[in-house]
Length: 314
Ligand SMILES: O=C(O)CCC(=O)C(=O)O
Image (cartoon, rainbow, N blue to C red):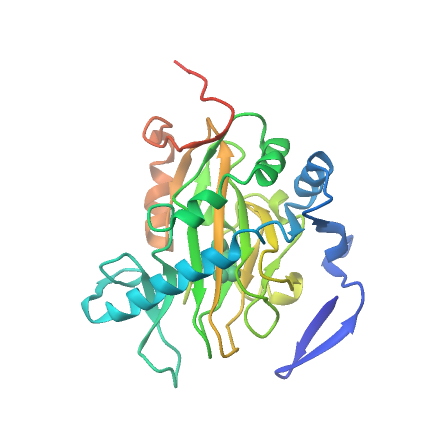
């Protein structure tokens, strides 16, 4: 299934979308897609390693109803706390920890939600979903036997009627790692298409190394002239579809022009010995962090184990 947008019109144009990333490579959504009830973890991991992304249809279906309830409860709470928000370099933060950005023209408020305070410390349903055995079989096949959780989980939330775009970027611009880096699993919470902000991915881009990012409305992003949306594949999907992507895979999503919110939730898994060497949100603090990369150590970055054991290293 594939779509293109011309002058604001969305048009269905082909049964097998082809992405021309370079003159020599073309990858379709079918090449990176498997199904939760039938996939073989080893073959799925091979797809992930080759393309840097993998769609597992329906993987998070058992969790989405409860997770959506928690997300919407926390969104309502954060909006009610907006008058107590403090200004921070990335936008505004409410006392419960939700990050807001400036809202677009014609929005009901002057601030819109970007990253919701929805994580393993605020939602039991979300925490439980990080340890789903079917996910972990795949994660082990891709990363090896000893895997930890990186971070506290995340929820990117696009409000209705114009909710923020997230420019194409590599997550390694925000958290570059010593070794392989995290494997992210982003799940749709609602059916997601070109109107409400489908995730776009650039298969194969995880092999390009660390690319230069610039400051954008939604923080670090790639230069739009070098990396226009046309170089990416939109992943149209249903609530519960999971998209795995490598820390250096280029991805992003456009505005939400629907009448309803469009949240996604993200788990990140990494080798148990891996750790962040550069952590940043903008060009200035990225340059400072790069200068200190050699000093970063694993000891202060132990995550909870998802698979296997933590082996002692002197
Ligand atoms: O689709 C979204 O909300 C953005 C997800 C994303 O770009 C990210 O997690 O880095």
